[in-house]
Length: 333
Picture 1 (tube, helix red, strand yellow):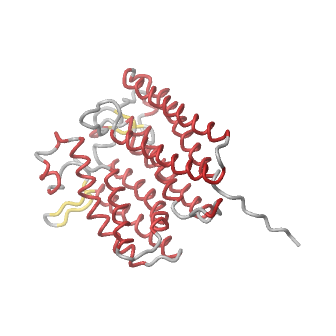
Picture 2: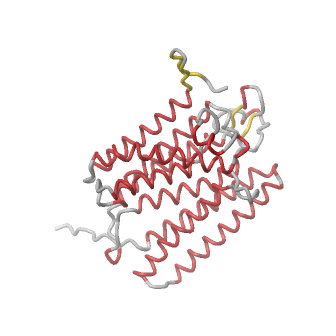
Picture 3: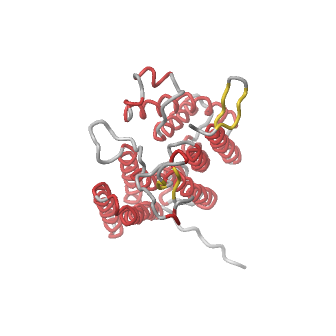
């Protein structure tokens, strides 16, 4: 049972619910600060918040129901009864993106890519806190059982139900990685969001694309280690999150490749970066197959997969840098 924080009459409030609320609040107010300080209207964020919740809840619930139909008594019950079951992060991100589009269509912002840029760092911080909330549930369990007493503690492992096996602390690792991602996105937002682009290309939207890229690189590896990963009904090998992450990484690479080819023409470095991407994806897929057949190799397999994910993220970042123009240095008089 999840630890209880407060009991108010007949209402029970759990610790994980409080931390999730803090995560949503951190995302909202940081996004508000970034958006209004860069010429945006506060009304756009106040409108986006209820829309994001209204779109995210059913979408996240629908995806989880599709992958875990056995946890629900039916489709309608999954969308109306939120006292049980879980959610899928991909549905949340899609819901927020859809809410931003509605805000743009209603005329509360004229620059949708800039709105997404301002939402990205707060989203990383919010996801970090949401992942931390899983430490207060029975969901923070990885596939790998930790038997060495030295590693039977955070940040390495957590104990299931307080008396069961010590398993890899997947969500806590995700919490730490998302904090790193948040720091990188804030630096990217401050240092590179307004970086001049070759050929007069749009500078807004790059923070959001890097958020999707880096988040996907993290999820490709960490979702493999989850005990309760979500799978498509016709596929029991690669999880739904891994598939979405791989498609997202490819989409971001294609976007920056097209931009780079437009302003630089085809160069040898493009072939190098495309080759690195394909090799890294192939090696990741092979070690995903390997770790499912040799569970005692998880440390080695996940280490290799992590290096490949890092290579993919850096590869896409360098493709982005190929589109950036060099700033002219001011000459001292």
